[in-house]
Length: 204
Image 1 (cartoon, rainbow, N blue to C red):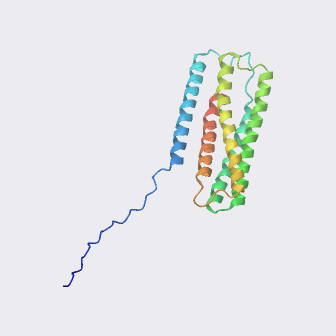
Image 2 (cartoon, rainbow, N blue to C red):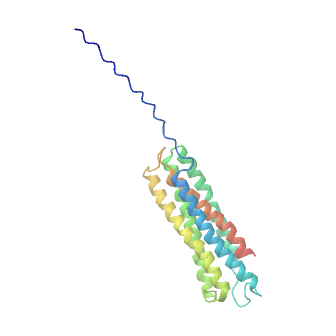
Image 3 (cartoon, rainbow, N blue to C red):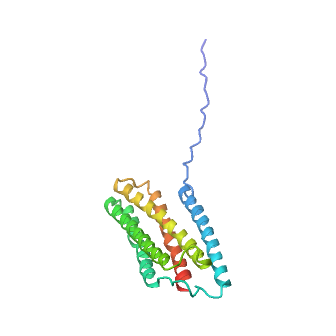
């Protein structure tokens, strides 16, 4: 008696589709949310500043010191010049040039720190000449608006300093450059914000 062979049908397994990367990475999405929130914060502060200014008869009041336009103009150029080494840093990251990357990010952090230092000197002189938070709405709105920007610059400079240290240690490889890119985007935002605040507060 012959036993026939049992044929077991093969199970066709469909090919697994490769996972596609999202159109917008989680890091970029988080940065968009952060910048949107920061933009709304400053929009509210700028709106309050404009309301107080338009309601005042004299702006600034004649008994208060004038803002140091010349010093702040030079300081603004220094802040905006920090974009140049940061752009070089991004190009160095694409070429995997760790040394140039670390040096360029460090230069950006130094320029940002110098901006804060000069701004601090400016504030000390203004306080000595009588412009304080208690100097009516003019002093209050000036220190709140410009001070809030200064806090953001300080946070960005700290982020840049940490990024420069990580770059020196070789933390940014071909597949891991998102932290560097997010840091650069935030610094561009801080510099762009100053382009709005400087003419609004110092020139008008």
